[in-house]
Structures are given as structure tokens and as C-alpha cells.
Length: 623
Image (cartoon, rainbow, N blue to C red; front, top):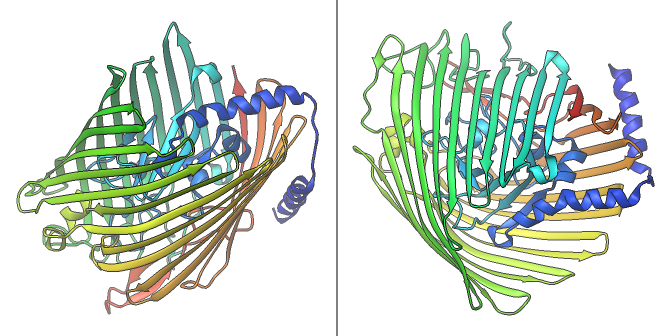
């Protein structure tokens, strides 16, 4: 295996330093333009600070999952929690989920798990073969998106028949017997477009040594269906994900569970209608059925009088969302306003040997109104002002919240330079699931208030694109870890450089620095991260090398994640790809805390990585 890695390394270095010229340049230029046209049409410069993954970039990266994309964003690094679930904002505690401030959309419709929180719970590592391009907007968000506040909004846009008419079959075989099979079909008849994409993944992850004969497992099997039907004025989506997984440490106090499993089934259905030039309505339904099995030889982390060492539960929850928005350009003003509503319901909670458990808290309703004005000062400048008010009401003994959010921005753009700056005030609340399991803390929990200033300066000249971004943010009553709430102050800076040598060779570099002040029991933390992408095309070959580096003063350890792939277009319709991930086996780690059950003191945490070392081979056929 080491010999193979050395050969792979030599191949990667060779590919990275070779500048090539291929035949058929005119055709490639046309193809390149087409691949980027759709992403440009969906970009809204006022949604925030954009990180764009065009179709061309996704294909060069050979990104097969949203996780592959996430790992390359220095400002918000992908991570998992003690349950093996995608949770980039997790502080490492027992909270079921901490990343609800990251909201996710498919074709401009939010996917959410409602009672559990952000749709990232299920979608954080989904197969993205159905996606054309992905847009990620960092702080602060535009108020015409979600009913709920966000640090980052992720927009996945699906493939369309104008570019991808026909079928696609993908077969992947990877390390430890992992495999993925995907088949999709896109077409258009008359003025109606439709897509069906079916994917099945069996992922055998690296085990995590916990000092016993039974290491922790995070293996899973997932079946995923994505489909839509739409015309110029209407759109209907149906999405289904069923995931059966081992949940790593789960609720085990010392991370040595006897059983730690979870079975999730989620359904998303939405319908949108543009019923006039300026008015649009949207309805969405989300359903999540979760079965959790936890067993240990010592009391679980949330042990109670009703259960001690064994917990077998099944919860069902539904979310109903509705939007009505108006959008119009009046003189020099681009006006948008609307009303958004969301109802989150805990339909049932069943505990084995106890039956259905009645709940004092089983419903949360969010009603929001917003208005946003973008005023053009000139052909190159605009000022934007957004206001949003939300009322969050909860039944039984849980208090309601009133949230007021404001964003003031200035944007400038010409052919060479662009600049944008925002001053904002956002407010966040804790998701219902976390409130439900820690009622003593969360019944009267005050909302988090985040205030800050961001700016971005970008320069474009010929083949060079340079961008520098800074974020300053002060958060009162930070709710990421509701068992240890505090005020926080942070500063983030990001430098990005893209260089296109020619149509065949791209270089992308990113460097990020963040500073968190006066963290409780820790002090100040400085974090550094970087990303280097080298991409080349040569005749029928496409070669990619990506390097992700991380370091922070808390862990004081350098991490380097190297991903490399080579694709061969065997024919017009058939492509073979060989890909290596975390080839150096030094990808960033995260912490799973443990408690000594005899003394109650903290043990040394486990430090698994979210990214396994693995090799995969893919055969893709387009028909």
C-alpha cells in the first residue's frame, strides 16, 4: 500500500507542475462557458459573501458528496459530532445538534428537519450527483431566504435538461468494501422539465479506538431519491433519504457503548408558484422519523428515572413551511417584502417498555415578516437595507421569543474592482429538540444576539482573481453549547486567489485566520487554515490535487489533508476515475469528550477525523 501511495504522490506532483495544451480548444472554451452559465444566473450578490462551486469546479474536484465540498472551505470547516453526524459548529459536547445556524436549500427551497433543526443533519454528506452547482453565502444572510436566522446559507442547484438531457449511471467501489451506485435521468417535454436521481451508498468508515476490544463504529447505509417536475411558473420537488447508521460514541458516558445505532427516514416535498410577475408563493413539507438505540453497562449521559443503561426510542416530527413574497424594481429601488411561516411539531415520542410519552412541549411556530430595499446610487453602486421581525411561539411552559434583525450594506462593482460591506444584528434561538431534553435550562432561555461588521474587497484582472474578506462579530448569550452559555467575540479574515493559466490549468489558493477571545476555561484561540487546488486537463485526462491545512493554538497540531484524483474519458460517454482521499492520513481531527464513571472526572478525549483515508474507483456512463 505504501508503494502505491508513493506512485500516486509522484503522479500528483507531475500533474500539478505540467502546463498542457490540448486539441479542440474552441470546443472546450464553449463547454467551459456553458458549464458556468447556469451558476452565474443564480448568483445574488446581496445574499452575503459568496463561495461558488461551479459545475466545472465540482467536476475538476471530482466532488461526489456535499462533504467533499465542505472540506475545502477554510472559514467553516466540516466536522462531525459524537453521534457521527455532520455538525461543523459542534463544540464537542452531548448536545444532539449545534449547527442549526447553517441553513440548506435545494433549488431555492429550504430543506429542514424542523424539530431536530437544520437540514444539514441529513444532507451534510449526501450524494450530489444531482447537483449542477453550489453557492454558499457567509455572514450575514439576506432576509428574503429562510424563516430562521443563519451564519451560512447553502444553495444546491440541480441539473437541468438544457445541459444534461438524458441519463447518467455511476458506480463507485472504495476502501473497506464501501460502494455507491447512482442513476439519474433528466429530460424536457414541451415546456415541462423533470428529473429523477436515485443513489445508494454503503459506507464502511474507519473505526475509532476507544481502548476496548470493540472500537467505535460510524458505518452507514443510505438510500437517496431526488426528483423534480417544473415549468416556467411552477415547481414541485420530492426528496427522500433513508439512513441506517452506527452512531459512534452516542450517549455513552465514557465512549464505550454496547449498542449505538440510529435509523432515519426523511421526506421533503415542496411546491412553488410564480403566479404573477412580482408575486411568488411556496409551500414545503418536511417529515423525519428517527429510531435511536443506545445501550451501555453504565448509566447513559441523559439517564433518568424512566431509563438508565438502555434507551430505545422512536420520534416522529413534521414541519410545515409557507412563504409569500413580492419582488419588484421601482425606479432606482429593488423592493422585496413578504411573510414567512413555519410550524414544527413533535408528532410522537415512543420509548420501548414505556410506550408513548406525553409531552408538555410539542409545537413551535415561527411567523416572520421582512422588507428589503436595494437602492442604486449609480450604475456601479447600491445601498441595501433589510429588516426582519420574527415571533417564535411555543406551547405549554416554554416562553415565546421576539426576534428583530437588521442588515445595512454597501456594494460597489466594476470590471476590475468590487467591494461590499455589511453591518448587521441577528438573533438566534435554540432548536426545539435541544430544549426538549434540557428543559430546566431552556424553558426561559434568552435568544442569542449577534452583532458585527463584514467587508470584502475583490480584484479581477485577466486570469487573476483576488479577494480579501474580514468579519468581526460579538455574540451575547452564545447558544452553541446551551449547557455553558457565554458572551463571545471573534474575528475572521480570508484571502482567496484564483489563477487560470489557460483553459486547461487552474490554481486556487485560500488562507483563513480566525481569533476567538476569552473562551471560557480556555482563553484566546487562534486558528489558521488554508486550501490549495491544482487542476489540469490533458487530452482525455483530468487531474486534480487538493490540499487542506489546519492549525489552532488550542490543539497545537498541524493537519494536512491531501486529496488527489485522475479521470480518463475512455469514450464520449464513458469515464473512469481513480481518487485518493486523506492520502497522508493527517486530516483534521475533532474531540469526543469522555467522563470516568467512577470518579465523574473528564478522561482524555477521543480524537477521530471526519475524513477517512481511502481509495475509490468510479465508472461513469452517460446515455
